[in-house]
Figure (tube, rainbow, N blue to C red):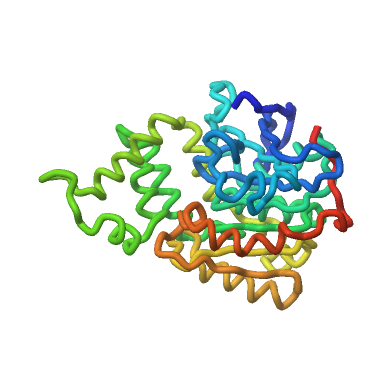
Length: 335
């Protein structure tokens, strides 16, 4: 957190017409030279800009001599406004229902402009961060060389919206909103098979099953490290992903994105269904050659993108092993 930097975005008009002032916080990692290609990483629901290093949530994928090698790439990560990472109560957002995923993408685009970044080598994000990646690509079709949405979709489905609606009800009505919402969410992030493999109906004591203890742990852990306002905000962003809103159908919007698109889905994901990603791939492939799809095979469901690092790295290595000296579009350095 000590390495957080800030961009002041004032009098910005969001999608519903309201005007806001936001301090957009971010962190930068990796290569410092001006010609280093930039990778933007968009965090998941309870994540933040602390991508690598102490408590870095994607240390297995990003770092020195890792898949996304910080000896070769500059890594930039914004915090979704209102996520509470800076521990500043003034940065929290109470009117969370005013915001959409597109609003966040627009704020990230403003941040990039203020940092004088004209081109990104890649944008990668998991879950809600992947949805924001889609939104950014639709907003700036020529900004990104490689768009890598992981365990996500270009839209929030009815199934996802339904679960976000339940989460919002828990967050507003429960006596223990953070803990209870997290326990509910954990059952969606995993699968029945994953939980059976992990616990197999074993008990911690005579009355408490190990699955119950595990859920209690995750609920209490989030309650100790996260903010209720932040959870409400992130849940709202998750339920509002839609690159087509006001623009036309999916094919019309996505075919305008010049990026090489690398969709990474998970066969057992109960949150962002693999079938939705495959349908998008097949539809888009009819109009756009440079689109690919990879499927992580796992029993662990949505959380597999934070578990199956070997598979994820295998899909990503061909992208990040490009000879950076021959890149035609090199970004300017981050201020």
